Amino acid sequence: MFNWFRQWKRRRTLRDRPILDVDWNATLERVPLVKALSVDEQARLRAMATWFLDEKDFYAAGDLDLTHPMMLTISAQACLPVLDLGYHWLDGWYSIYVYPGHFRTRREYRDQHGIMQSDHRRLAGEAHSAGGIVLSWNDVVDHVAVDDDGDNVIIHEIAHKLDMRNGHADGFPPLRRGMDHGQWSRAMREAYDHLNRGVRRGDPEIDPYAATEPAEFFAVTSEYFFEAPQTLQRVYPEVYRQLHRFYRGNIAA
Ligand SMILES: [Zn+2]
Image 1 (cartoon, rainbow, N blue to C red):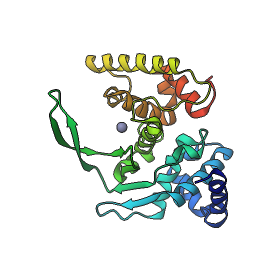
Image 2: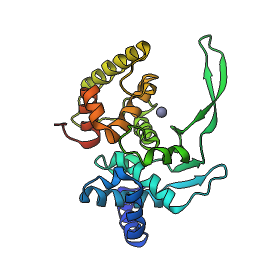
Image 3: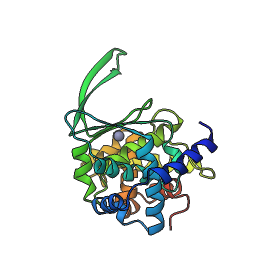
């Protein structure tokens, strides 16, 4: 779709299918993370959430009764990571499947002998490189009310989608113009190695799931960046600075 057409369409969406005040105010009450934003940030997020609701396809999976307030809760948080990056960072994919709770997926992979294997996993969320995201509603609800635990399945999966904009999720999303690729890699690798040593000793300073692979390190530290920035700044200040440049577009104080 041409840019001018997309912009015209999005202006019309804001005019013809806005989020009503009563619905937006209820969303702010449900999501403290969004309520804590400035008035200007809330207004920009509201426009993005309007487009997200309008353009993405929500699917209820299992026996979930997916309501409008639930879709708003998801939309507002899904747009949070791109508030300063720009809404177009969420372009190119459409589907959001929401399960009532953890869901089972079958994973196909090649083992160390080169033989194809498969296993089943129970997940709270998943992002597909060729598609959208899958969420467990229970996990959305579990973490939405607590805005400083560094745990947010929606931000996690959106971070994977941003990471996938330049290929596989590998912890290296396309960086903003002016960002130094070497500095990003060094900050992430040193912190990732440090966390892995902490996990082996049994005292990781952030969620040890971040130590499983670089893509998870980026997704988990993104959760901390939005939900528990002080923790991330204290434990991995260089990672905090890089994420600040990436998500906010300027250098962290
Ligand atoms: Zn992940």
